[in-house]
Image (cartoon, rainbow, N blue to C red):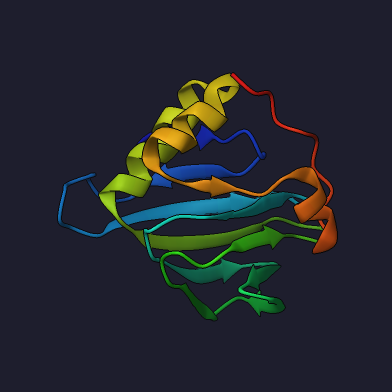
Length: 144
């Protein structure tokens, strides 16, 4: 295990397995109370196993509440977002690809380059207006 990294949206991640091409990567993620992960999509599938707390996932076109013990799968290429309206953190294991794990490391190391890094990986990020339309308020990201 490594020291947790903090993402620009406030979530923290700890890598539980090595990042190896062709093998699943398991990451422990925490969304803080009141935290959001803005609407986005990417080719990489993600499976979340909720360990503690409660959060809401927007997948496709609907919000779903998940709590401890729930498994929530998001296929690749599906717009999705997270919000944690609870008073405490939501803690999950995330099973995803090595590509996604490398992306997280890069944006944690260079948060001001978030959009450029996303573009390089082929990931889509919603505009502030698109986030507002699903009930998430985020500041406009800085463009390179």
